[in-house]
Picture (cartoon, rainbow, N blue to C red):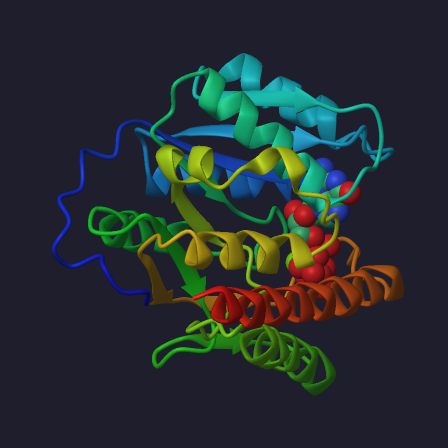
Length: 256
Ligand SMILES: Nc1nc2c(ncn2[C@@H]2O[C@H](COP(=O)(O)OP(=O)(O)OP(=O)(O)O)[C@@H](O)[C@H]2O)c(=O)[nH]1
Ligand SMILES: [Mg+2]
């Protein structure tokens, strides 16, 4: 939790848009959409599909036809999670939504936990669903993935000096105002370091960030998009941001 939040007054949340990026999630998109609709009936959903070869985009189109709360953003090809979210955020801001939620399609994030995230957002600028705070859990994750995720968070926390436990997670609720204040135009991160990038920007900008425990469940259907490239990108970017931050702080000290 960053400081400065307690004394502030927060405005109403407005309408919620749950953004679900998809690449080859044909076996998952229908059930996750239905669960979101059930869990938060007033919310809208935006499926941001990168022209999935398995037809996820067409399934999403069918769902959107049947339900005016469901929308689809078709993108020309696989450009990474970060790019899909940035496009989704812009769409949500342009359409006047007050809250933009990040959620995976693969069932790892439980739509039934969304109301808790949204309740916390009433008193925060950004809420992170967190596996690594008391009450948070991971189910069915192999030891290697657990280590990778915890290691990624610890490394990011130390390198960037962030007071957060789960920095790489992708189940989050932003106030639109927060995203507008983060300067999304120069976000270059593509893979899951996108999540580290946004958390770092939010804390650095002085936003009140709250972690809420979640239960994260390993995907049952479909294939992981985690790759060596994504890990390498995360490692070098986090290291570069960490060094950059230190140099900047040292220079600031010199000038004061
Ligand atoms: N639009 C779009 N969505 C993507 C892309 N890469 C991943 N996704 C989606 O982002 C979400 C998270 O990706 P996952 O493959 O589950 O990544 P992960 O959670 O790190 O790995 P596993 O859970 O082990 O599969 C899923 O809904 C994916 O379909 C991409 O390049 N474009
Ligand atoms: Mg996943």
